Amino acid sequence: MKFLYKILLWTIIIMAAAFGISGYFFVNFVFQTSLEREVGQALDGSNILQFAFETASLNIPTKYGVLQDIAVEQIGAKLDGGGQGSGRLLRLSDEEKKALYVSEGFTEDTALLQTIVENSRSWQVIQQGERYYVQTGVMVNALDRNLYLETMEDVTEVFEERAMGFELYRHVTVVMLCVSTLVMFFICTFLTKPIRLLTRATRRMTVGDYGYRARQVSNDELGQLTQDFNSMANVLEGTIGELEEEVQAREDFIAAFSHELKTPLTAIIGYADLLRSRELDEEKHFLCSNYIYTEGKRLENMSFRLLDIIVTRREQIERQPVSAEIFFRYLEDMFAGNKDQRLQVSFEVGTVYAEVNLIKSVLSNLVDNACKASQVGDVVEVSGRIVEGGYEFRVQDYGVGIPEEELQRVTEAFYMVDKSRSRSRNGAGLGLALCEGILYLHKSELRIESTVGEGTSMSFVLFDMKEKQTEEGMNEI
Ligand code: ATP
Ligand code: MG
Image (cartoon, rainbow, N blue to C red):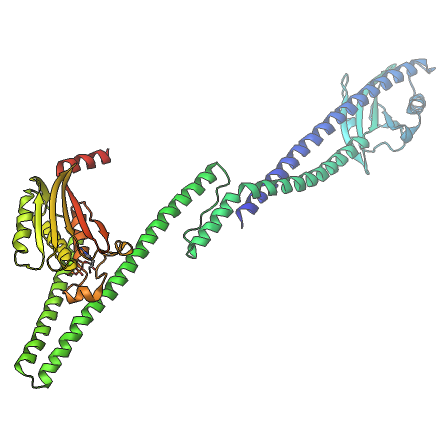
């Protein structure tokens, strides 16, 4: 059952109970008050009749000083004044409680008569047919006799009023219930709107619409819930986006990997087939074996790099303080054999916090890329300087440059701007991906500035450990 209908149902039940109970007590209270008034009047009437009877008995001529039954009957008839039509009935009984005079329609029941005692007035409410009466009883002293005077006052009207009261209240209750149900329906519809909006948002998100947000329509707890739901949805959308990107990146990686694997393998298989199926002269034989060797080397190189990338994604590193100079000396030694480009090194003496071998690998990759992008005879500059909070390395070349739209992608694994050019230089598009992984471990990143035709500058900063630690400490605070 819908929450809205539950509220409505409970409201109707509670209101029906409240109206019913309050109506019952109210009508009954009015009834009791009216009945008490009628009883009071009946008792007053009984009092007057008693007085009238005693006075009348004194004025009746008596025989032997005794009030005879016939005289009592006569007085009774006189006092009766109209019988049932007057609304008041009476009964006079003698000492043995035998009726001497009875109004027409007076009850035959003598229960009250049996309870009458001297100097007290008894009463009860009785029903006769469809009518209700207040019956009173009193002992009267007439001359030497103790007689009993009973009256009956018609109070049917009071009972009818009570029935009418109940009827009226029933109608009022039904009307009030209808009106309050209608009003409650609108109030509940308004109050439960945030719940409906939240439900809609949840359903939309269930079918994959992660960008859908619930509209906040109130500032109460439900409004807060909507806000929290939307914040949760934001986080969820971000996480799902990241996951999707990650999945996409993995798919791209696998696709590129299989492609890169296929090219050298095809060459190796092709040349190997040539070698085994034909008699080749020495020169061609050497060429074929050389292709197989270089492509095999490329595959080996690729597998090592891939392994390195995977390792950098998992490992924590130990950073050591070392002199920046060792990196520049390493580069000079490494590229001493390169006759095509000239390596120009300039650096400030300083301390670098690094995992030495990994940073050497980054720098040699960057210099290797710079050489591959340059013409024969070009200069490749490698520099180092102390910057605020760390030490900056920069590799600058004056080669082909990288188009602006490719800048974001060059660090992706297997991504090469010019595939044929890179492949011809034994590239697999893994160098910068590896550099990025290593720098990530050093809590740093690669900055690339490039202009097509003018050259490229790749730089990164290795932060001082102490400063970095205090920064982290402050962040935690
Ligand atoms: P690998 O490094 O695996 O041998 P690679 O050098 O082609 O192969 P990356 O080092 O990852 O791969 O470089 C990716 C691509 O970015 C290169 O193929 C090249 O197109 C471009 N690139 C990198 N450095 C430079 C540079 N200094 N100048 C121009 N293009 C560059
Ligand atoms: Mg490279």
